[in-house]
Length: 545
Image 1 (cartoon, helix red, strand yellow):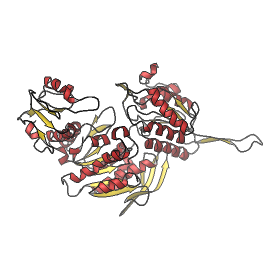
Image 2: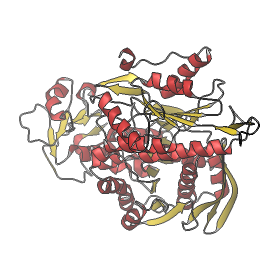
Image 3: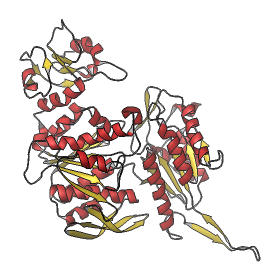
Image 4: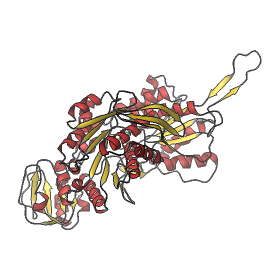
């Protein structure tokens, strides 16, 4: 247990207040979760201000308060700081004994591919015999323990991150992979994690509601590469390193310029330091060669699909080989060891004559590459291979010209979130109109916005690219019914994609989170379609409208 003065002993910002020698038992940002003897940090959010809950936190046993308002007369010590969000990460690090100082911390950021790249790197480190933990937007992996990190996708709050890091130190781990979102970076949640290596996947259109424009969004991602320059030396064999995607020419020049440490680049052309050649795509995975300045690894295999996952593999490989000094052959074995990532191009097979996939694609770029990957998969399936066939050929009647080929199609179900970046609603529908054969527009966390208004914006985007409602696209308010419609429309050999939710475990209508898992929903819909036993379709309020 730390005392209040100990928490502020290395605090990097100005503060005021009486540092009484008060023992601190815990740190909380939710007054309802305060423990007797805990420190309550009052955060000012978009919809609520923690300062308004200080009296309740004290009634529940808070031993001290940290806030940014001028407040007098509290019965417990009150420490005023300039920004409580910025303060929280350093107070939490101090409370848990600065665990980042005893770990090699690899941060992975980007718009798309963070979770996949984190899992790829995790398997590489395991293959190298390195005792590694991982904190992602899906879960925290600490040895044999897997902890859920929440319903929706963002970096855990600062005190949770430090708690996970401390548990990793206690478990004897030496390295950690920390998936780091733009929200987490902008809100300084991980400033005290003490990153050693920074990796970026890409920076494409997303979160404009939060950051305002692309430049500010990119700058928030760039903070990761600025943070590695301020990390105190831990291991002379592992100097700070930035790992950059040379193919992403929107982000690369900026990130290269602000990265003041050593850096390396990766990509699918021959210009990066580490690149891929001889890429072969199949429905069952990827094979490619990896070339670096002084090595070559032939016939690298991954069970993942799509060109974007070659890029994710290169990002993880570069961090491991250049940043951590892992042998390239061992790194290649690690890439092959990952069987897949939950909710990322995850196949759901109940014996149907077409391919059903759940994917997390929830940004314009992610949807684009997912649909392009589906088209690659169709092109690579020989007749009679896998569920269904790529195409069939019927000879024409005498004198009626060439035969008619029935080409397999891509059918996609997706939505766009409420109270988030509105521009991407139209952009995603435009992308689907161009790359999918049939699009079904549906709910995806409408929150307090009108679902019908969201769907109208999406429909307008589809129409602008030649979409015809009732033929090439449909609007179905209930997501379960949308998936069922996709299955009814599917022919043998088609690919049906449900995009946008992936691994997530809930969907928000109004202010209520309803339990929802696209994978369960897909299995329920397939079971009904095939007339076999399966799970029940999860409930959403749109089922009643």
